[in-house]
Length: 177
Image (tube, rainbow, N blue to C red; front, side, top):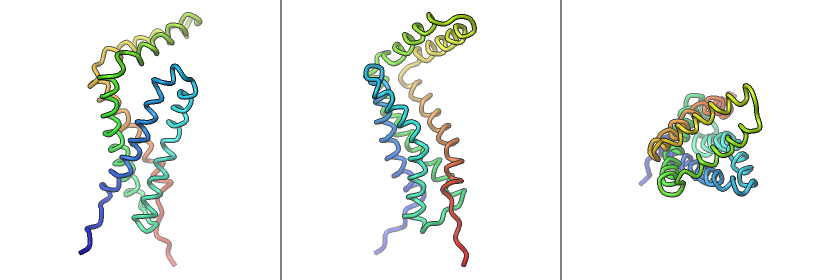
């Protein structure tokens, strides 16, 4: 008896889970990076690697499960789903971190750095830093659930934006003889 072929959504869940695990590992470097600069650098490198990893996963999907063919629309939907599922998994880690671990550390550290930077600047730069500090204060006043929801929507938005060029690069039409 043959198994029913998996759907695009099921493959997107699988690859989205792997992407989500990558994001969780990447996110863990952010707070630790304030004490160990190498980890901050790794966080930045891993963030820059996200679209490349997305392309690799879409290409893998195309080659393994679509016989080397993938339309733009199918690649776009797969990519959006993949980022959506990665965002959901990462949201669980974000909530746990902000609810039980952070205790204001991340925002406090950012605010401290902005205050230190503000003391070295004058004029328009100082006004810009003041605006940034006000934004950070607003973020710091959010609950863990509000922060998590903000991050989930942000991840989905950026994932959707990344999906467009990635789908264009990953699509491949059937070769005619």
